Amino acid sequence: MPELSRFYGVIIRMYAEPSERHHLAHFHAYYQEQVAVFSISPVASLAGSIPQRQQRLVEAWAELHQTELMADWQLLQDGRKPAPISPLQ
Image (cartoon, rainbow, N blue to C red; front, top):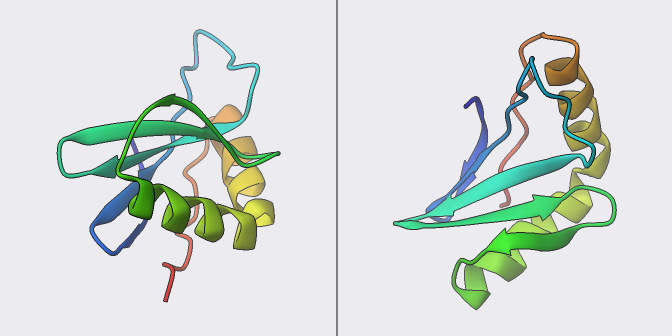
């Protein structure tokens, strides 16, 4: 699963399954042993969980980078490599 960004101990990844089209654009946030899945537009938690502080950081980062996240989603759907996205600073 390609890594898009890393900040404050959170790793953001996104992937596509070529044999099965995802219907909702989303990304995965990893923090230690925990994983959460977030939709891109609107930014919202879909599944899993990470600590509340990290979830807020991920949501803020995703709001700032929604356009880039959607562009990466489309690249993956087209079978291409996604571009890295700047971390939250």
